[in-house]
Image (cartoon, rainbow, N blue to C red; front, side, top):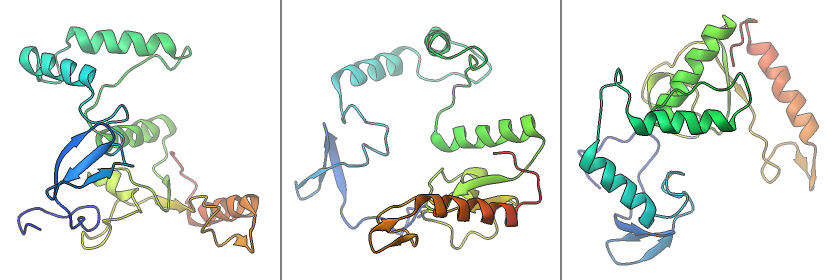
Length: 194
């Protein structure tokens, strides 16, 4: 472990990863480990996929970064292609870099649209480490950072295997769902945004 790397989402794994290829990550002892996280979902086609490598290489060589006030042909082409697949009314694109950044924007959009400020989050969720995203994250990294944003309410994550509503193999997801929304009603000031 390094004393210079800040922990933000729970403890780091003991192993040190040195490379990744396809569906596997490899530690410094050469052990191949099946990556069930897909690089935190960013490598669902596998690590080092040739087409992805080619596009990343081309973009890094020719157009690696622009200020957010500029548009580029790839951004416009992406927005047009995505909008063509979406139903009318869902045809605007906000290109962002990270999941946390996207979650921050989603909260802001919901609050602006509804006029509310409360956000409901699942109690086993992960949304990122930025202020608003961390406030709605419950799966790790909540301790030692002080208070989060006001107006964050928790809803139990449905979990048939480890649910307190699973009694002797009889999982009552409806009771769990109703319990969760009853808890939201008790926590809320009536200003839900999302």
